[in-house]
Amino acid sequence: MNKIKKIIDVKNTEKSDKETNSQKEFSTLIVAAPDMVGRLIGRRMPFKEVAKKAKLEVGVCSSVLAWDTEQLPIDGLSIAGFHTGWQDMQIVSEISSVRPVSWHNQAAIAIGDIYDKTGEIVPVAPRSILREQVKRLADIGLTATVATELEFYLTPNSKTTQQTVDKRHDYAIDGATDRMETFFDELRSNLASSNILVESWQSEWGLGQWEVNLTHGNPIDVADSHILFKLAVKELAIKYGYRANFMAKPKSSQVGSSGHIHISLRDKSGHSVFFDHSMPHNVSKSCLYAIEGILHYTPECMPLYAGNINSYRRLAAGEFCGHGPSWGFDNRTVTCRVMTGDEESTHLEFRIPGADINPYLAIAGVLASVRKGISDRRQPNQKVVGDANTETSQQYPLTLESATESFIHSLYSKSEFGAEFVSHLGSHLKHECKQFSGAVTDWELKRYADV
Image (cartoon, rainbow, N blue to C red):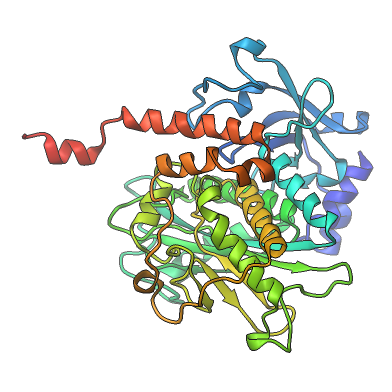
């Protein structure tokens, strides 16, 4: 138990030396893993029990990988269902992964991987998919550094709570942004205590929309931080009388919320694979290959970046979320934005993903496409200098139905993520499409009620 406390104290960057030496007592430990939607599932246990275990392990029902957003079971899955008896699985985590959950009183959390009853890691679990892509990069001597930036809306949860903004406040540093400083200061402090560092935050263009940029790191750590960040925002929003919304397009009258993914690669010697001072803009040939990999394989990976019906509302709206296989230097209208400078700052920004992504799957898709692009050694099309919306005619799938068809019939997806995963996620996607096809929307009621 003392070992656990030392780990937590080292990670708690917000505490002073005096506070750290006093060592906070924790009563609850949460052992969790991401489900297919990208939410954490798991169990709580007395923190004192950790000292009695060589590793952190809790049992969960296989249903955690076999339900939709409302926890309705999905048919046609090989790994879980009535045909398997809804068997047990295990979430297993390392002691070193324990971190405080500062927005909960006296709680800590450990995020782990899902294993079956034979002790084998479940290959279709989102964290397993990302772990495999990290390994495939390592096998060819490459290491990825990634980061995510998330936009979200804060709306009043009661009539007594004031709107965060009542007019456009993009990049503003006065008015509503000053009023929300207390909220974001507490958010930042809680995140730092949980070893999640915030690089910056700002008000965004949408009414009540905000953006937070998290620090970069290795893909699995970043995905873990991403999912905990969303949890922290939602919990703290309730405390302040707000509701946090991470939908890709929560309102038809407002701009959508992005979940951009930034990536750079390094070789075994630690040098940037994307930087070459002898090339135009200091961009290496491998970087150009990586760009083409992202752009070429996006149609076959689209459900990893846009996994639900609402995801495509943002993409179809023609906002700053990319347009077909387009790229350019510091251009926010393209799909793959290239940021240049010195060796440390040269990287790619993939703008298709929305705030609703499962970060494990989305990052895995980017890693696979970048690696395959470098292997293919194909140059991308001409860079876009102006507006990609007018200069790029080819479009990516704009509905979940069409994206699902591309994904489940893709030889590339099956070779990169495994036929079992493609079938598993494909069943989830088909279920979602079927649920939507039988739903009557507010738009229909408003438009056709008097027909």
